[in-house]
Length: 501
Ligand code: NBP
Image (tube, rainbow, N blue to C red; front, side, top):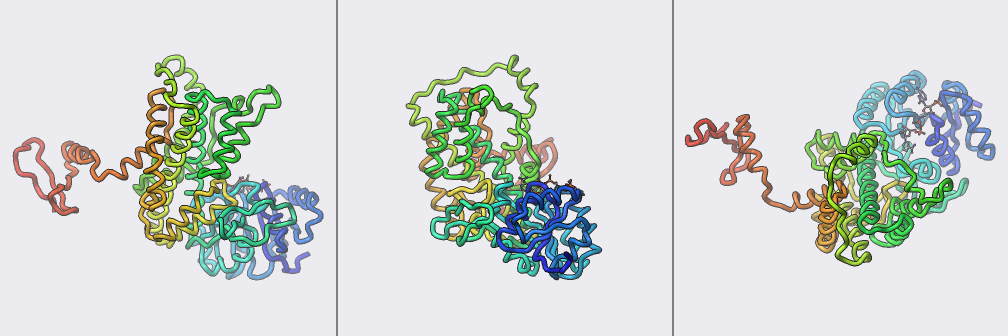
């Protein structure tokens, strides 16, 4: 029925699109859906007969005609070329002030390009990061939207309704939603991030931080197992207890469940039958490449990406393991309880550093792209729905409430105190791992970042001298104003240096 009565349309009925459509319908909005392969639309509608607010169309024309004006259309298809193809097919059917929302994992630079192109047609474009995977899409994702404020105002009611919610006083996620029974009340985990690609940029940094969080957890598991001699089940119980404290988070919670799971086939711990070769879809790499492009130190995210790459060359590693020597595993010179506590402290300190890097990256990006980001609010909307949801994010919101211009999270009073208290254990854990030949790339890179950031003088004085020696790249002096450059004639180093204007 093409009566132009639907509140919103959605294109792309794979897992994310289907779940988001049901979530929107649950909240009482009338929604039309469209999929390139029509049989999937039919199948989807047949599986959800008791959702009266949902309808589907075989032709794109009929789909667009079914929407209230100005039309609002969410695209949930593969990022990249498929997204461009869908946008191209929509342009002739849309009118001025209509809104296209891309909920896929688009690269922020693509979103900037698409927004510019569509604005030439008078069509609004919102690049909205959707976090939380399938479950988030179904029961409440975290939504990070970038685009014009006019476009945001058009979609705001729907976005705030369908997003995850957190308790306003504790900041804890309000969960427990069931199909057809959305969570009532709470603070929505959806916000207007800024113009053009800002929403997708923030979603990308979120994913980069997620890579680091996951790798840190793996390193903790590796050390508890190899150095602590603990079984998967014992480590699972430790993670469950950690979920009650400062590390309280979705990833810690699911790690506890995973480690306590038995393999139904062999009866062994499930985690031990899973091959140690990680995959990746690219957002961690984008974050790291962008950090390198902008010259922002985000080594912990990059190490997490490289750790996946190193894991992926499984056969090569197996071969090398028969050739390359290591060192014996050291035995603990403390109680297992103290060791477990030290790993927890090291994990927390490393996590603080990787978030500090992520927020520094966003700070630099806002200058690069003239965005105005609200960092406290970004941490707040990550509290629910997201894979990285964690109690710890409330501390980040509070840090930016104390000082919205905070240059680095490490300088906030709370985080400064945490690291000051826990760093002894962090250093012990890293040194024990290094001395036992156990790789801990994110724990150790976070520690190097911390030590680098807190040192007023680093050895790059020598590096600048080397650069001047072989390439006449010049150097600044500690006894001259910044921005004044010199070069020494290294063939005649006794001659006075030249000042480079
Ligand atoms: P996929 O990324 O697997 O995309 C499949 C959908 O794209 C299908 O509906 C397919 O239609 C449609 N599609 C393709 Br492919 N090419 C198309 C084209 N040229 N024209 C129209 N439709 C086309 O689906 P997903 O896993 O649901 O993810 C959707 C988006 O959400 C992606 O950008 C993804 O990165 C993002 N995302 C995913 C997750 C997650 O946990 N999976 C989380 C957050 C964000 P067809 O049925 O005709 O083939």
